[in-house]
Image (cartoon, rainbow over all chains, first blue to last red):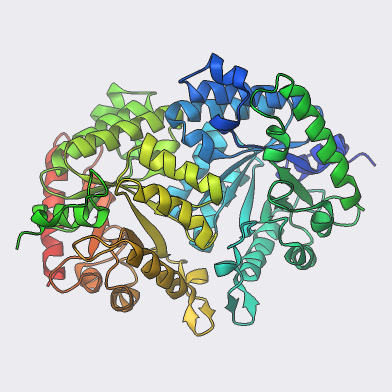
Length: 300
Length: 300
């Protein structure tokens, strides 16, 4: 059975987000997501010299070249909005172009912006992410509660987009709130149960819903328990590589058969070189291939 | 004693954020914050006709005119990032110009963007808000924990900026997570205790810290208990007016003497007219004055 043949959703031209993600992961044979976190100080010296004083254009050129290198290898890319925003309005133009080029290259795009607000404001963020920036999926923050997520859901479901809700993040202090015991369950478990409900409302043919969960690779025990709790939820797993998560740590994120998680690596793939390294493109290609190889044993 | 005379902070040219806010509130004699949430469908018909197809320029013109009207009346304005983002990169240029003009008019600016992320990503959001967009303060989301707030704090403290941490939001479903009982205390109280700690690290001469709390006007009981718990914390109180909060509801947000809270109204001030109303500028002026009047009994 070729999973790509299953992608039909009469509701939308693009198909159901979960099915598109599953097809992309199958097609590339890896769950690796390349994170695009451009930092001026880490860019190749040649690009910095060519665009001195124009950070946004430098970010765009760098990300374009990264996309050309990784597009044959990985199914998903995740631009981090913060770094583009720090380059001002021109940075947002670069972000828009990077997302567009990624889509043209057949990549699934997750805009990592961790937005969260209420009512018409949440709808405006969704419009920004899905219409203006045309991302396939967006990360969102659940602290404001269910009615802050619903406007995102409504917008996403118009044409087959996806959401990833922060559940258990990869930073050392994430447990400060997320692990608080709320009536016998940790806060992140309460959030996870909401994600399960949202995901169950709109499942694709692959069996997964269009609402996923962000769960850090640095939390292997939580990955395992959440995999059991959320069998029909895609996981977006940051923290692999530079932040310390290993292939063994992320193994529990996958369902039998190997679907169910995309594992993000940003610096490990996009900045595996010193700024004066002439062969930085070859270094990115090699780092992506090595990361894919290192993830293979995780998917049993 | 004239509180304005107390504004000296040798660390920064701009002065301590809490002192600047206190001075602005004293100078205008009101704690009203005008929220700038531009919506295409609500703009005056004349502006929509003049800029048909160019939402960002229409938003900029409208907000500029609102700023000219409210600058003599209110101390603080709060642009909502989402609506500008929904207009794409050009919208971000408009946001930048609106923040710049507000500052030129002597207004304190709070960028309502509810950002939240970790490590260098949080620092990039802070750089965007405080350097690129030059806001005086930024709203942030605490779900990722203490180490997600610290990069914002470090950046803000370089030159006297402020933060407002989401504690208890104004939406109907805010209690779903924020009211969860975490070991005998609601989650929002746990967050509030962290805000108290951050605020105590860097207090201005007015006695308030540079980290404030967002607490909805729709939660009067919580406002009262949080005022007691956080005597040295500025409150940013959304939900007044259109969302249902009354002057009686927000009274508990103030300390004796009338400082300690800025109360935001967005639609009530900026859209008190029908789109075909020729006298929309007079309507905004009248609405701002009426809102200021309605808030007066709240400050005892």
